[in-house]
Length: 108
Image 1 (tube, rainbow, N blue to C red):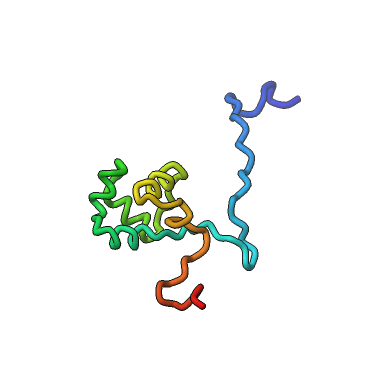
Image 2: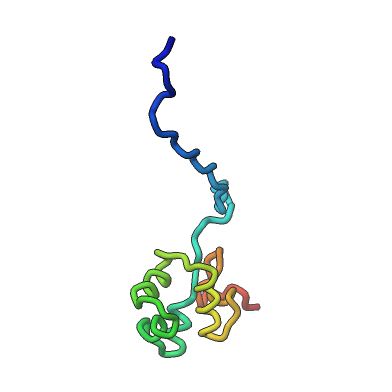
């Protein structure tokens, strides 16, 4: 009966269980985009991407990726960026788009 041995000579490790995603794709649910005001804060203070990157110990292109939303920072990096600008992290980063300046939102 049978081939006399288990199929395959090496047992494969079990695959990790699917991770729960932080993102809920239902209508109106939060997306996985992290919006930021890094470019605005840099411009207000006259700081170049290279100056910011050197202060944070990251590559200057990473600052550009962050500003364009092509890269979401780790929590540690997000906190360091906020600390660099001396503002709370929620002033720099949000899961919701920031209102455009001069849009009239919040004025009354």
